[in-house]
Image 1 (tube, rainbow, N blue to C red):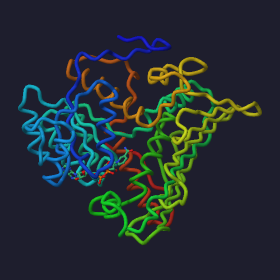
Image 2 (tube, rainbow, N blue to C red):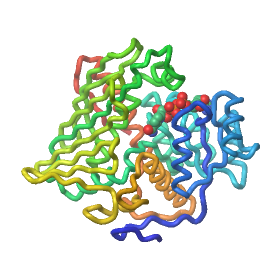
Image 3 (cartoon, rainbow, N blue to C red):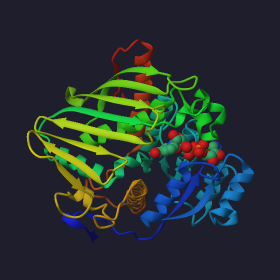
Image 4 (cartoon, rainbow, N blue to C red):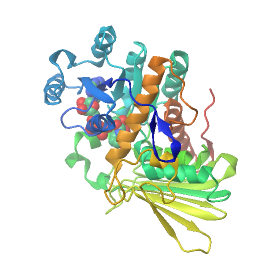
Length: 397
Ligand SMILES: NC(=O)c1ccc[n+]([C@@H]2O[C@H](COP(=O)([O-])OP(=O)(O)OC[C@H]3O[C@@H](n4cnc5c(N)ncnc54)[C@H](O)[C@@H]3O)[C@@H](O)[C@H]2O)c1
C-alpha cells in the first residue's frame, strides 16, 4: 500500500487495466476527456473502441488513437462479444455516447461480465436506470458514473470538513450552474448541441439532465446526504427549442435541510459557472469549479479563510490523496478525471481479485447515484408541469 499524507492509503496497481471506449471519436467531446483521465491515472491502457456511430469515423478515430486494427470496432455489440472472448479483453468499458444509448450499451457489456463506467445522465428513463441498478446488484460488477467534479481534491476536502462538523449543523445548501453556449441558434450549433435538445435522444429534459444532474450530485455528495424532494420551474429563455434551457428549483435534503438549484445554459458571459455554497449554524463553505483549487471557509463573525489545494495547512486526508503537484502548480478538471479513473481502477481491480477494500476508501459515483440523477430529472419535470408542486426524489427499489 502506498502511504499518502495523513495515513490514508490507496492500493498499488497489480497491473494496468484494459479500457475500451464507446463514443469519443473525431468531432465528439467527452470521450476524449475520459481517455485522458484514464491515462492520467496511470492505471489504464486504452486498448479498444467503438468510437463513433459512423463506421468510417470509428475506423479513422481508432487509428488516430493508435488502437490495434483488430480492436477498432464499428458496432459496440461486436466489441462486447469479441472483447469478452479474448484472454486480454477489456476489464471495463467507458460509455461516452448520447443519453438514449447508455442503457443498451451498458447491458451489452454487463451481460459479458465487463465492468462499466458510464457518463451521465445515466439513462433517459427511470425504468432503465432502475434496471441498471438491478443488473449491477445481481452481477456485482463495478458500475461508476462520471460526475467528475466530485473527484476534485477540494470537493473531497469540503465533504470531509462537513462530515467532521466544521460547519456545525447544516442549514442551507445552494448549487448553481450557469453556461452561455445554448444562446447559439440551433442551425449554427454543432451535432453535440443538436441532440441535446432532441427529446428522442436527450430524454425528457435538456438543461436539467445536462447540468442540473451535476448540481444534484455535487450537493448530495458534499453534504453527505441525498436530496429527497424538489419543486421546480422550467423556462425556455434562449433560442426556441422543445425543452427547457433554464430551471430554478427548491430542494430538500435528508433531515429537511432546505436548498436551491439554479441552472441555465443561456446566461451570457457564463462559461462553466458551477458553484456550491453550504451554510451551517457556525460556518460556511464555498467552492467554484472555475477556481477549483480554492475552498472558502468562513466562520460566523471571523475573518474568512481561503484553503488551497496541497499538503498540510488544514487539508484532510480525502483531499490529500489526490494532491499530485505542490501548491502553486495548478490542478484542475483534467486531474479530477484522473482521480476518478484511479478510483474506478481500484474498484475494478479489487472486484477481479476478490479483494475487500476499507469502507469509505473510494468515493466514486455509482449506478445508484446515476439513478438518483434520473429520478431528479423526472421529479423536476413533473413538478414544473404541475405548477410547482413538491415531487419526491428518492428511489423505491
Ligand atoms: N461528465 C461530464 O461532465 C459530461 C460532459 C459532457 C458530456 N457528458 C455526457 O457524455 C455523453 C456524450 O456527450 P458528448 O458531448 O461527448 O456528445 P458528442 O455528440 O460530442 O459525442 C458523442 C459521440 O458518441 C458517438 N456515438 C453515438 N452513438 C454511438 C454508438 N452506438 N456507438 C458508438 N459511438 C456512438 C457519436 O458518433 C459521437 O462520436 C452524454 O451523455 C453527455 O450528457 C458528460
